[in-house]
Image (tube, rainbow, N blue to C red; front, side, top):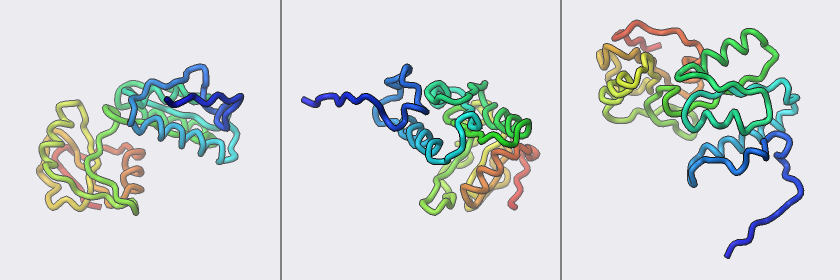
Length: 183
C-alpha cells in the first residue's frame, strides 16, 4: 500500500491555495498538470505576484483561477480572451494569463512539436458543431485543402503556427461569415 508523504512545506505553497486542495480535476486530466506548470512558471518568472492576473472561463479550466493565489477573474462563456485583453489594455504592466478550454475557445486541428498547426479530418462537420454550440469564429490550420465555403455560420481564421493562432485569438477581429481569408 502506498503511504502519503507528509511535509511541512512545498515549493509552490506561496502560489497555490493549499486551503482548496486537493483539486477536483479527474485523474489523468491535464488541467492539474498545466496548473502546476503555470504556478512554477509564475515563481520562476521573478515577476512579483501582484503583477500577475489569471483569467478563466467556464468548465473545468474555470476552476484554475480559484486555485492560484493571485488576482483572478472567472468570466462568462467565451469571454476570457476579450476580458483579458481589456485588463492588459487598462494596465499594460500586468502579466495576464488566460486558462480556457471546452466552451471558451474554438480551434480545430493539431499542434506539432515545433508549433506548426496540422489539419484534421471532417473540418466542415466540426465547424457545424461549433456553430451549434454558439461559436462564430474558429481558428483552423491553414494547411487544410479547402477553407472557403465550409460554413455560413462560422468565420474561419487560418493559421500556420500556434503563434499565429494565439495572435488571432487575442486580436478578436471577426471575419465576414462565409468569407475565409488566407493570410
